[in-house]
Image (cartoon, rainbow, N blue to C red):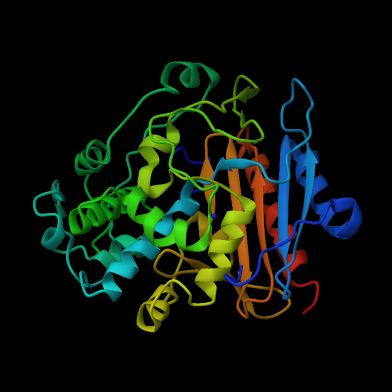
Length: 383
C-alpha cells in the first residue's frame, strides 16, 4: 500500500440494526466540531459514525464529496479501507486456527514451502504469529505514488502478492524474527497466500463467506482489478508534497494491496464488524485471547499512539479518561480510515476521511492528532 510520509501503515451487535440519525437532529456539537476540524485542516470530506450502548448510530459529515461539484459527503458512502482489511484477514486466519487447520506457531515454510528464502530471509524461522503481529522482520518493498505525475503513470499498475513477496526477498530482513516490531504489509500478503493454500479459495472469498455474509456486511467488497468505487462515495484526494491536491479516486491500489489492504466498505459495515469481533462473535475463546495478546509498537507508531500494543491483527491503545480501545488504522491513496471500540464494547466510532494530507510531515501529524482527539472525545463522553 501507499504509505504516509511518517507512518508504516497504509483501520454492532448481530441482533440489532444501527439506525443512522441525521447530524442536525442528534449529533453532539462536539462531534460536529471535531469533524469540521479535520475539514479545516484540508480534508475534503469527512464521515463519522458513532454507536452507543443501545446499538443506535449517529452520523455526521463535513466538507464535500467532490471539490468540483461541491456535492455533500454521503452518510453511507463507500471508501477504500486500506489496512483495516488486515483485521478481517487476521480474523479469517484465526478462524482456521480454531478449526485445527493451522497453528499460530506453524512456520511460514511449513505452509508455504520455498516462498520466504534468500538474502537472510528464512521461512523456517518465521511463524504465522510473527506475520500477524508484525514481528517477522521481513522488509516491505511496496510500490509508491508520491506525485501527480507518478499517479498518472502508475495508477493502473497491477502486482500479484507473489510478485510483491518476491520484491521483499530482494532485501535483507530488518531484524531477526521475533526480535523487533515493524509494520509489514508483506506479512499480510503472505497470510492471504496461506488462506488460499489451506482452503483452496482466494483470501477474499474466505473473508466474504466467513465474515461479510454472516454479519450482513453487504456493502463491503474486494474490487479486484477494477479501479472504480461503485455506489455512493466521496472522491479521494491526495495532497502531495509537490503538485497540490490531486483527485486519485480511480486507481488499482486495492487490487494489489489484497489481503493487506484491498477492501472497500462503509462506516456502517466496519462498525458492525469491529463490534462483533470485540464481542467474541467471530472467534472461539482461545483465539479471542490470542487476538488481544499484544506487544508494544515501536518506531513512528509509538510516537503517535502512546502506549499502543499490537495483538494479532488488532491494536489497543489507552484512553486518557481510563480504560482502552481496540482499533486498526487504514491509509491508502486518497483515503484514511480510523476506528475504535472501547474495552467494554459499549461505544464505537468509525471515521472515513477522503484526503491524505502528505504535503509535509507536520500536516500529516496534524491530521493524525485531530482524528485521535475526535476518538478520545467520542469514547470519553459518557465515561
